[in-house]
Amino acid sequence: MSASILTWSIIAAQVLLGLAMCCATFRLVAGPRAQDRILGLDTLYVNAMLMLVTFGIRTGSTLYFEAALVIGLLGFVATVALAKFLMRGEVIE
Amino acid sequence: MNAAGSLPAWAALLTALCVLAGAGVTFIGSFGLLRLGNFYARVHAPTLGATFGMGSILVGSAFCFSMLETRPIVHEILIAVFVTLTTPVTLMLLARAALYRDRTEGSKDVPPAAAVEEVIPRQEG
Amino acid sequence: MSGIVPYPLLSAALLVLWLLLNQSVSAGHIILGSVLAVLASWAMAALRPEKPRIRRPGAALRLLGMVLFDILRSNLAVGRIIVRSREPGVNAGFMTIPLELRSRNGLAVLAIIITSTPGTIWLNYDAAKGTLLLHVLDLVDETVWIRLIKGRYERLLMEIFE
Image 1: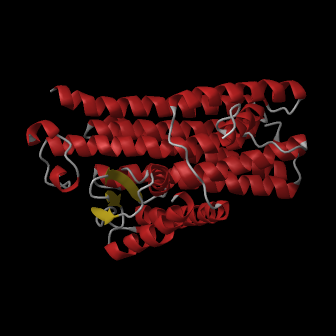
Image 2 (image 1 turned 30 degrees about the vertical axis):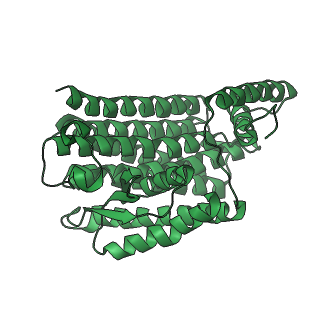
Image 3 (image 1 turned 60 degrees about the horizontal axis):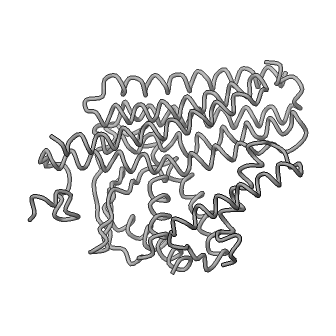
């Protein structure tokens, strides 16, 4: 009983996170300006990280945790580099 | 799916509640990306997922693994610390880049540079 | 401070990080982690950063609790704006706040607090005038936000860092 509650609520949480990733992807693809796209990408990274944590709970393996850590760190570096590029790209114009 | 079987009922319920609440808040935050009107309003939306959403899901995960292995598993704290320290930096940089771009384009929607700081010192002198 | 461990707090944090990453508290990991932490604090000493002085740990704990509570509250507020409001983001706007806090570490902590609280984002700090440019999602009454930032955070941060 409790196991099926946990399983189903984790599946529901993953569906919600998947929808959240869809929203972020929409902003990434459609965003009117470059900063909107980068914001979408950043949100996508955070959501993917949380998705991996829920996969970890579902399977009971701590391997997913390390993948989530790597995604979190890479997302930070990527967003900082892109934001920096936005500033510098305009300086050279 | 093999993880859930060995948890007591109250622990499973608590984990489920934490994970569901976190995922719900994260979804609302990302949904804000669609609903909010301009870029500066949209910057506020992802912080929901990066604060409460992340915290709640990580608490659920730490609790679940601690119950499964009957010893405290707190390495989720690492993700929490990294995300708490890095998300403000990325959002601040992004918002400042957007502000800089809007100012160089001469947009009327943002406060002018002179009132706050000279972002283009070359033109000033 | 002492010559061997110039930044004791940093070294302790790095040791805890190492043990958490390896998920073990065996003697070997403690020794390896301590060596790495001391080496990293020497590297940090070569950079000569301004040394933060935390004067009142009690006030820091109170600030932490307050910030967690405020993050929870503004999560609810921003969530309500996104879901309920017919035209969300209509009240969003920029505002400037004069600050008396001058300590650079205190300003860094304030930037992290303001940005990680949903609904407010730190945009720019003018060191010459001491003013802060913010963007707020729900800017109905500026005095509420000024009272929140100056009364709740700035006073405690000045107690801690200055």
